[in-house]
Length: 153
Image (cartoon, rainbow, N blue to C red; front, side):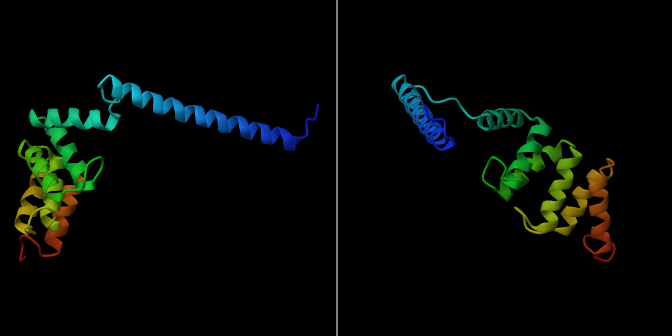
């Protein structure tokens, strides 16, 4: 019996190739089973999470609205869409969520999804800053330091 490493390596490669083909065959079989029974393959976790988040946001959950805003702002799990991000940030901001107020201020300061509007940016930064959100306090200070939105702006 020849146990040279070359033949063992070839044999191992041959076995792995057969295993890969078997996995591929199993995958095709599963797809055909789903098609035959008229059911869809299981949803990805991200699809389920998005669906749940959307449901909660539409019921007025400010945290869910904020998270949707972030997702659309960054294109995380959804197509990047600044106008949609602003829509969800505003819903959460109107309920007093400081993080949403700050992000909405940022959208106005940079003209993302809305026309650039320094006064509106300062308004939202101030709302969040008054609740103690450090990032909003910093952004508000920078707006004033750069003469944007008040104090000689």
